Length: 45
Image 1 (cartoon, rainbow, N blue to C red):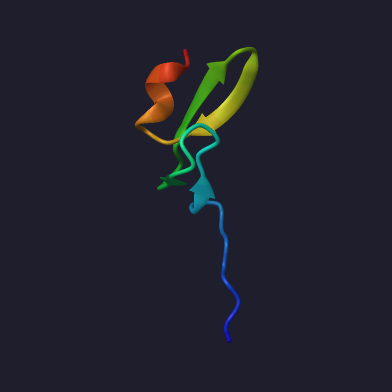
Image 2: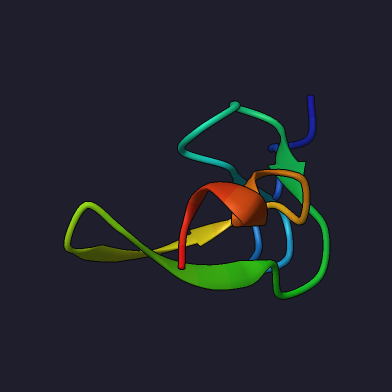
């Protein structure tokens, strides 16, 4: 059984749990810089 490959492009969004395709969006949310998916980027600054 092949191992599941995780790479920098297949990250999980910490807000919604969806997959971040590409680089995602870096936002400041409650004092923390996090990378989120495009849909959740509106919740940060």
